[in-house]
Amino acid sequence: MEKNTKRSKEKKSKKKIWLWIIGSLLTIFLIFIGTAYYTIQKTMNKINTPLVEATGDENEVQKIVTKKDPFSVLMLGVDERKNDSGRSDTMIVITVNPEKHTMKMLSIPRDTRTEIIGHNSVDKINHAYAFGGVPMAVNTVEHFLDIPIDYYVFVNMEGFLQIIDTIGGVTIDNDMDLTYNTYHYPKGEITLDGDNALIFSRIRYEDPRGDFGRQIRQRQIIEAVLKKASTPSILLKATDMLDVVGENVRMNFTMKDLIQLQSIYKQMDGNIEQLSFKEGDGKRIDNIWYFIPKETELEKIKSDLKVHLQ
Image (cartoon, rainbow, N blue to C red; front, side):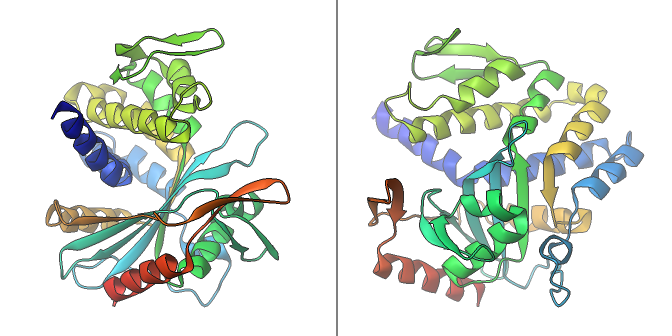
């Protein structure tokens, strides 16, 4: 019974992790409106990059979030290190239908083999960002799923973890004893600063669960950050937090969009359907491991998303 409860909590956490990121940013902005309006505006000016600007397509029209029209969002969590353009380790597509009060969330395996639009190659889908940044990632996902992508949210995970130092560290419940070089993370409740959290979030091969275990730890860290960031005491660190957000987050949501999104999301709790690829296979091609989606399952997912977006 205890294991089922734990799995249920982890599943719920997985469904909402990126929504929590957007929600936390919105919360930070709204909390600080009365005390740091200038800083908020400066931060929004930094992070807001319209898709028309990102893709270079002059015919692209920037969508506006309303309580009527369905829309889609591509979430990119990028492990962007120094002197490295980074790869999008996390790619999640969310479709929202405000009238039906429903939301669908699809996690795309980062090793999925597909055509990289604008690069004239077939490769892992997470390489699209490395080859051409947000524009190529958006275009590649649009082609892969055959749906339009209206919005994107880009988060540099390494930079995002700087917030941990800003808020004075975070405490999490570690479910497995782990050691990486000189770093040791005992099982149980542990408190992490930014440096320790960064290593903790990257451990992969030392965890028998591999990438799945790493994703669990990343979710734990983000949840802990968002929880602490919502406390009143963080008001004193408003400027520092917004500076970090400004350096590590990019999106084409405006402040008005975010406020509208919060209103829509309040009506959707419990109506989030998780989609995933379950029938694909792993395959080595030219000595490179890929995830190959099953065609019938991919077509069904495409159809579900199209119907949801009307």
